[in-house]
Amino acid sequence: MTTTSGPPARPGPDDPPSAIDPEDTEGTAAPSGRDASGLCDQAQDLASTGHLERAARLYQQAVAANPHPSVQARALFGLAVVEDQRGDLPAAREAARRALATGDSRYAPRAAYHLALSLEQDGEAAEAEHVWRRLLDLGGPAYTAVAHYGLARAAEERGDAEGAEEHWEAALALPPDPEALSRLHAATVVDASRDLSGRLLGRGLPGAAAAAVERGLSVVDDPGLRLLRAAAHLEHAIADVGAVVDSGGEAGGDRNAPAPEPDTSAAAVELLAGLLALRGDPVAAERAWRTGLEGRDPATSEEVRRRLRRGFATPVEEDGEAGPPWWTPYLEEAVATASAPALAGELFAVITRMHALLAVPVVEGESHPAALRAAMDQALRTPSELVWGPGVHADFRRRLSEATGGRDVLPEGWPEDGG
Image (tube, rainbow, N blue to C red):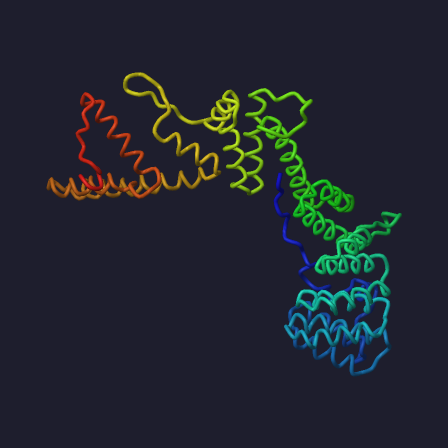
């Protein structure tokens, strides 16, 4: 069976790392004077309240003061983030490169992360990969995971499946001590798990996708991961039910395995079509129904048709006999193609139009026979251009013929040509 594409691959977090680090502010006194560290504090406050231009100027002043390397790295990284938020990518990347060059243990990794994401999202894959590799040598476990995740995406883009697998595994690896898992590390594992499982689903590997999902769920109970796990289970269900349908077909399957009973085969067809429609593949769902309806075993085909018609109304004719109404083939088609809502919409639109055409002369008190006939004629022709329109006209012709002793009293082409 074919499988659906998974969710679109995520290139990484949508937002760059924040310029605000809790360690920058916790336990520190209010800034004093116009020293570089104080300028950074002020710039950080301004940036957090949306005053980006003023924040950029203060960060630039702090950089120009040539302070201690750690303060210089902080100022450069803050400037990179602010310039990025202002939309000045060249200035943002230049500041990030300078912050990265300081080698500072706190801000160089963050600058590398920011720079690599910016480059990757702008299609600069080669330079982005180079920066991800730089990040491997800079940070602790969290930034190492971030770097491996970036390198996994880069390898995927190059078509290097083996290299990507190595980096995916490293990105999803957890420290021996769960308490040592930082928030950044946990978020990276969840993002990588979600990304990888989506890619694996798209490749028709639901088992591997489910395993990748569990890696992320072991860290955080993420709704997106649960949805992906459900999608993986859906693919397994499609494969299992598809095998039952195939075993009841004309060929294939294990010759030593017993053939399924008609009700089992029909139930499998119904379930398979429903699962395929749930997956968002109405063409495959219709194909499943057609396979069941057109099978060689009459008993199975009849049971499939009964299931396809499940819930259909069966009106009783005036003579007391009940039989499939004229609209049954159209309902069958709608169910098989998962287009019942569209058919219902057509019906309501036609009813609304016919009601309006007939209601206007009633409301206006129209009494002229020609005007009343014209309104009725328009109402009768309302469904004519729809697929099922000729069916409703043919049914009326049949009923009228039966009521008049078998005579066809309507002109040819009624109501379009003989109204």
